[in-house]
Length: 204
Image 1 (cartoon, rainbow, N blue to C red):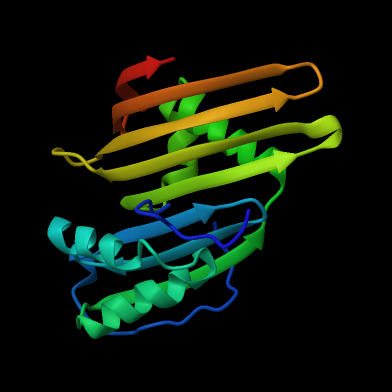
Image 2 (cartoon, helix red, strand yellow):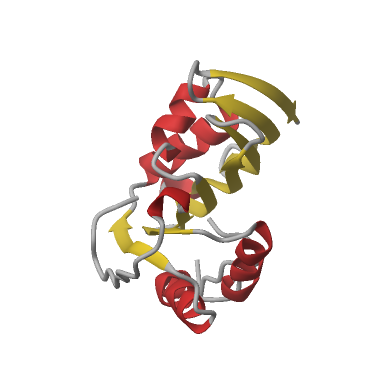
C-alpha cells in the first residue's frame, strides 16, 4: 500500500527506538496501554503505563489518528509530553511482518471461539487498541488480506475486560473469478480469572 495513516483507527514488542520517561507516580493506580498497527510489511507497537481518563484516552486517539504509521510512537509521546501526562516504561517497536502471521492474528480476532487465545496475545495490556490494514498479492493475481479494528478496555468488575472487534478477512482469485470474505462484529466480556466469556457475534 502507499502512504499509510491510521485514519481514525488505532491499532508486539522488542525495542527499536524506545524513548522513555521515568516520572515518579503511584504506579498502583497506573494502567498499561498498548497501541498496535499492522500493515503490509510491519507491525508498529507502542506501550506505556499511565493513568488517563476515558476522555483523555479518546483525545489522545484523535490527536494521533492521522499520523503516519511509522510515526505513531513519536506522535503519542509528543502528545503525552505536551499535555503533561505522567507516564512510565514507554517502549516503541517496529518489526517485520510475515503475511501468514497477519492472517493468523486476523483469524484469532474474528473467528476464535476461545478467549484464552485472544488474551494470550493482549494480556500485558489493560487497555489495547489495534488496527490491521493488510493485503498480500501472490502469483496469478491471488490476493488475501484483512481490515480489522480492535479495542480492549477494563470492564466493571476486577479481572474482566471488554473487547470490541469489527473487521473483515478476504481472499480472491481473479483467474478463477473466485472471491471469499468473512465479516464479523464481536462484543465480548472476558473474565481472566476463570477464562469464560459472553459473546455476541454477527457474521456475514
